[in-house]
Image (cartoon, rainbow, N blue to C red; front, side, top):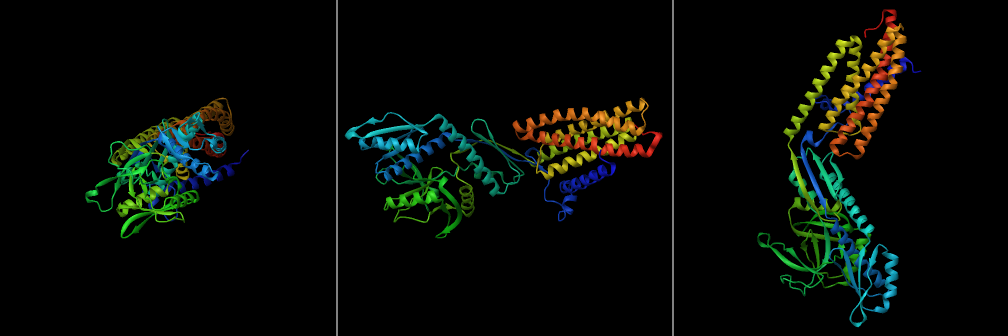
Length: 525
């Protein structure tokens, strides 16, 4: 049995800790005592603070196509290492990989290589052509395609989170949705248009060889070639010119390890550093194509197409173009935080103004204050001094909720305020159960101290059972709910735990002390 001194000691320690964590979130007080209080505060959600809500769609089919293109290049490289010639690997229809084997005698060796390194690719029966060459057509298995799509969404989620972190937005809410979509909420954003630009920018970086022998203005281009706009530096009025490049990329942004804004010849640019895999491929490609031009393509536009003068080692390259300093800095953030594995488009954009958020705060606070005031008056009127104790415990409960949300970095939303209002009723409900049990024991002739002990012991079972079922419901809401529902679950679960502590633990210590002091005179209940 826990003694009264221990109960009061625990209650005092909890009160002091909660006060320390709750004060930073109180207007005025938190600012004045900023140097001695914790930095953690209650964060306001999008519906209270204002900001921007985005729904982004991930082009997962493009991610599968990009993976096929990279697989084709790797098959060509692996074949070369095994003295197997593989020609013109390309992606057809977005979901099929096609390449030629000029020497049919190498079929068995190639199939063994494919089976060993690419079991996730399924190939049709090779089609024989002129001079004994074989045409292979393969595609990813359904399981592999689904895995790549899920991985593309997960990678996009991490990339967007990294971009937001470097962009300086506090407490973003980023989560996956059905249909390969991502929901982004950015509370308190002061420059939403720039955030949309940074997040919506695909930054799909790739390196392609230029086809000088193809006229990009022709209506029909040869297979495996595409025409892209070339942003010529110094072109009048930002005029775009077309350039023909090979469809299959030699390198992609996935191989970029770092990106930093820099200056080249007085112009803003972005310096790239490749990872070990990218550095090896970049050195091999530049060594095999000396004298040709390599196009640096970002989001479907050629930013530069320098001539490869020699093999380039060290894993470094740069993107130059008509950048402003801010554009180069933003692009470096995007590339440094990771190139998106597939195009991402903004399907929905909603902006919540700070004034609307303030109206929600005012309405929620008014509802909470009105409900709390009605409860306080009723408890004091109906239960006398015991009701006043219940009101004090209610204030203690609210303090624990505020401290808990601040300590765990939880975000307060409008549904969260609704959870707090509901907690007020549930906290008082526990006191009502206890008080009615004490009244019954007093009517049965028990002494005040015996009635208090029996009332708390018997009511605790009912309170614990009812609150436990509610906590189970809040866990389910938090696990499967979205942002607002999660906010409701967090505040309600914190409120339930806090109310059980104050009603069963702290309140019992006060009543037992009171009953011992009053003796046979009785307690006001």
